[in-house]
Image 1 (cartoon, rainbow, N blue to C red):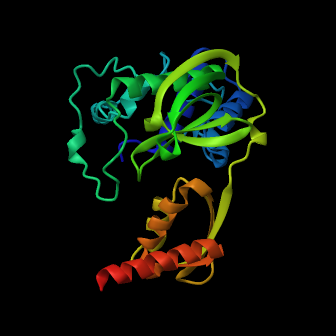
Image 2 (image 1 turned 120 degrees about the horizontal axis):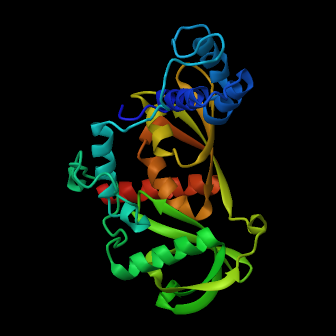
Image 3 (image 1 turned 30 degrees about the vertical axis):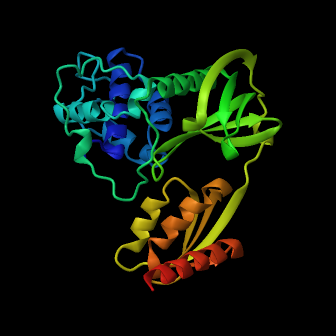
Length: 302
């Protein structure tokens, strides 16, 4: 693993503790406060004891440290190479990240090293100057809580210009597209960025109470038969969704997921990809769509 969630957390917590010890301001309460702020809740059971009983030999019984200088957390060469590879991703470049300190670092891999076999090929043109300009204007509006005026090509290729309040930018890995959730005309809309032809930042603040604009959410309930590592693959495939898993027996799990109505086609395709490992229980409308797609596939095979 290039980055360890657990150990990175431990290292950063202990570095902060030692920083205060070097400055002579460390107390037992501060140790506990730092751990609760920066680590996992269960870390309070292990880190203080390891620091105070001498296991790590970093603090004495007076909470003083033999370390003379504030500890630093430098990145390894491998981590820098990985970050350089990420920085070369055309989607990351939309955010204009700084590559300071990585200028002379060789990328860990090139972008064409990864081949996507389950993604649509008509994704957004992330390197189009106009697309980049629109994306960054929306990003600025989100950061500043400002409204925007956009020109959008909707159904039947009709172009409209209107004001809206941006709520969230989302990325679909399956479609390789960004979309904007925005409030307009008193409703919550989902807009494909590729269909926005112009975007202007306005000097009006957005509606603070965006929670009153709710999107249409669906609940999908299914049974999963954990053969051929199906449970792990399903959890990975649907990692972006709110979900609960309940174990029924040694090989069967009941999984409940929440998804946006606009994403139903994509969710449908993902469920079908698991074949007999998944049995959908509800909703009925989802089951009907599954049956229709399977019938169509049978017709194509004949």
